[in-house]
Length: 354
Image (cartoon, rainbow, N blue to C red; front, side, top):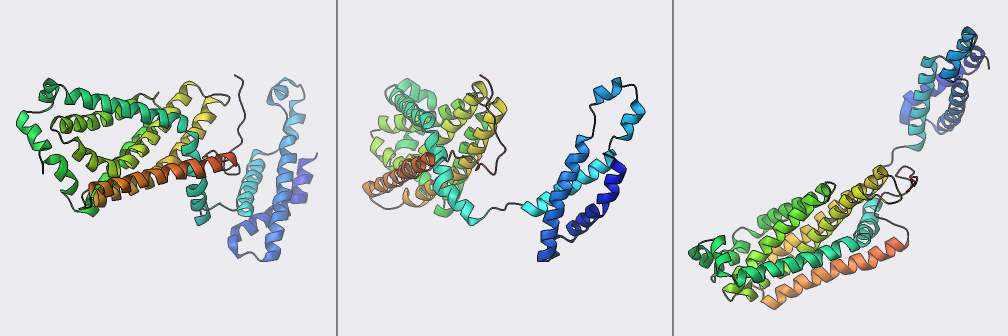
């Protein structure tokens, strides 16, 4: 192919395409159709020009180097056509913008599917963590020497007596500001579990231990004072949903960390990208769950409602979340949703050899 003749024949089309691209959204219907046609032609021209480029190793070995160089396309021309094709593609296909439909899909399919798919991680995490908290509470409640190591006897009495610190904690601030503070703290803890999971799971385990230790101390101290029922009446209304969200975040973080160790049939980079995107969506969804938990903790827990009514509200919120995950999540997973971006939103993935 004579490149000089080729460029002369098509330069007008390229200039016209450049002109239409500069006009942006002011194109008429006919001009928009023309832009599409010119985009397709220019993409074909670029492909033809690139196909004339010889292998550089072969070029270096051939004797008639000057003859080969004369048929090599100008790098500036290739760069210009590449830029034109890229700009035209962006104009023709457009930039995808998030919409309310995307938000609805995320809440009804993407998020519950991601939580449902990771249930084999967060359910065992929840069970094991609850057992650890219960054992710590029993150990602290039945060993006075351990209680003495936590705080002085007068301080322990101040915390566990009627009207003490454990009871006044939930009513020490205005409900709205307290709910916002609780939500922020819990969302940060969940985000840390999701993000730090990539560090081989160890930070997630540490965060879980700290949370279970804090819960175990409360159980142990209040049970030793004979007021475990009061403590559970204060914790259960919001704690069921709050701890479930933390367990989901921790389980997802552990899964992300295990992906570093064993990426499965995908390459490690692809597997981490897939799990990382799901974890990011999980963080957004769990922030909403923790917001509900924070509202319960700020307005229901310190309210004057009977203990049975407050606990009933907490159980109802927990059952609603589990039904949300196991009904909508299972349905979405069966429909092919994995809690990741849709197929058209993510790049193609190829399995790697084991």
